[in-house]
Length: 173
Picture 1 (cartoon, rainbow, N blue to C red):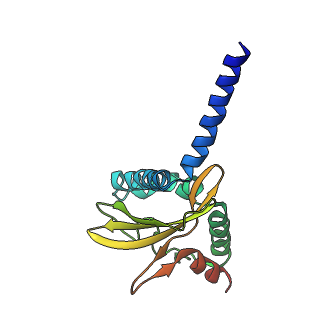
Picture 2 (picture 1 turned 90 degrees about the vertical axis):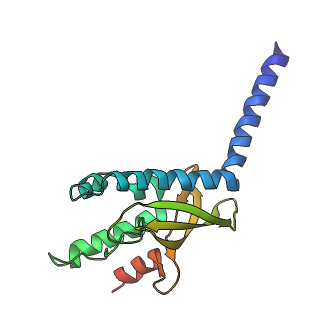
């Protein structure tokens, strides 16, 4: 009986250890980012109407999928805008980092590469397609709260932008 109990406990410990190791694999990280964008873009694509913004606004994708640090900076931006933005002013937000634009249509995402995978950080480059236009976005990822979360949205090219740095610069004025 003790031998059976020991085998069961050893099996459970091995399963728990392998689950943790799996979360630190490229395959898991790829699945995680794909699942995030499947959810986000699913909501956007289903609600591409004037009333759709209200539905999208009910979700908190940042809370669900972004790092604690990203959410802390985002909260500072929202507080800054409450104090400084004028009535008709959009404040910081002129475009949406999830969809890489103001409007959207036929959103999709594919992973281009995963690099610098460490125990608590990684970089995932994705190609966001919006209205048929491809935009390369790097997602620095952090491992916290038992899973991978997006810590920033960095675009490249002529209109490249570092979202978190932009938010920090905005609130420093």
